Length: 247
Image (cartoon, rainbow, N blue to C red):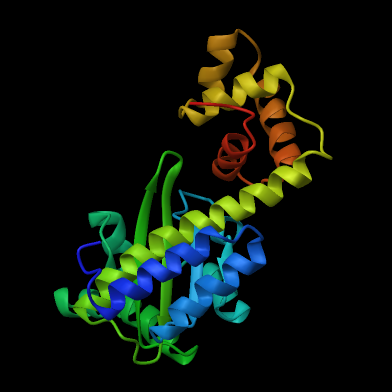
């Protein structure tokens, strides 16, 4: 960290060291949220970028935003309309709300998304994308008049990356413990989920394995149930986490 000589650098290093000593998900969450609160960003969400038709709520690992706001955000399909996420998708770079508002003139719907966020207690925020093998993770945080100065922003990028990874590890650890009491995937389910993870459709997998499309779909649904996933992308993430498949 190039800024390790200043207050932000020292604080970030201390945060990472404390984070590495924790294992329980709730302990990790408390430390992460507390760190973002220090920057004036109490509303924190650690999640994954949803694909077409995926339920954003099912991709959330940690959240301190009001549930009412999350429900409204999903119901209004703001995932596709939020100008901040649009910018993140386009650049895969860390973005603040202020960046987006200064960069271009927002459309009516985009302005509505930003204005409604203010009604739920935030007027600025930051979104840090984390590139993973299974997709793009996101750590987004917002609040009233947060500290998003250049040095704070540099520190927050590091804090976000370590936070997202620590939350994922803790959730994975607890998920593995739960998985021990569940039925593991069958060899055929593992085989099919591996093909799903490579992006193959049910029709393509059926042709590769010389079985019916309906059979493929049934195996996928059974795997999703065992992995506690409501959609395929999260099932792939869970299967990778639990060591059921490897890419």
